[in-house]
Image 1 (cartoon, one colour):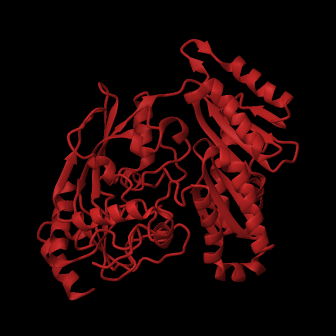
Image 2 (cartoon, rainbow, N blue to C red):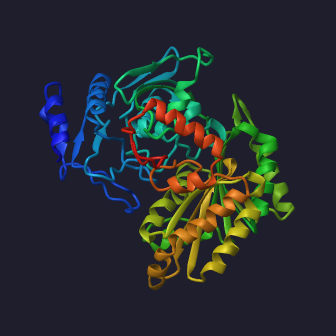
Image 3 (cartoon, helix red, strand yellow):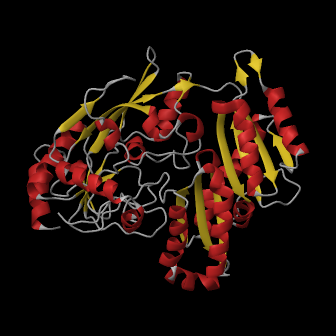
Length: 471
């Protein structure tokens, strides 16, 4: 470690215990896709907001770059220190969770595991609806810092929409508290929503107040197959016209994804007997008190079958069958990791443009190389697609790896032409900084950099994330 960091640690040691300083080799910071390597030699684990404040205040004085760390599940490298002189700040010890029965609100610290928050809500007869594949290890602070999305955005919104209050520590150590459980609050700038999605570049989130919702009563999961993508949009619009905000999830699955699950050794029970390229898994809340809309749902789907918009449809009649359906969707990311993608794209385009967009992109990728397999899946209801590219054989991997940037450019150029987003829910991190500069509106970029330069003029909080400029 540098003498500057050693001096920084020595001073902090007066207020923090020895066990709160972890040297390299004794802590792990992962890039789930194994593209980036953490280079930091020290990790500090504060126990509360005041300790976070002391650390940042001293880091500001000694010009120590700080990299905030949650559950290390981020997919764009925001948690990775890319230089030895950077210090990892883990929030894992800030893990308190409280539920308030009178208001049905949660008060959580940033290191709390998402699944623990969800379980506490369930135990109190409520739902915290943020649903992610990594919920067993990701932390709510990281979810807020990246404005996480997931399966249920179609009904409940991103995590930004689930948060009422926020506490954070600014780069100079000052504590910003907006921990008010108010739906209406126009007292000046909305700093809560400025910090949410800022990926640890403006402040370190330490606490939040979160909404909970009634638990859906016996929602129905339906798995159906279609001939083409136009039929997916047709069915979605038909279902939306009738059920509107009662749709909990509407997930697009390509048959390639199901093949990957089987090829990588996972055991699943796919209900389909006819081979099609696309399937959809949706979940709908059909009960309004004692009233059931199940017959209306069945009739709506039957009408789609008569119009040749659905090939096969299966209702989950038992909890076990529902779990088998969702197991298929939830295993797609795990199977992708075992396969090893060349590049993974978290993108969004306008809903009505999805069929045309995917057809054009598939054609462009095929023209680039015949040695590519595409596994596209995603949250159709909010226009979010995970367009992941794999080699058709291991022999073609080396050549495709050399051409990764060209492949990314093909995808992102088309996303831009369709007025889409190159980052729908994962954030910018370190991996998409140049793409953000290329595709984002210059005026917006100017404003973002201006805010960063005022809040963090020394560029000490997560340097290299979102922005690529030196202090």
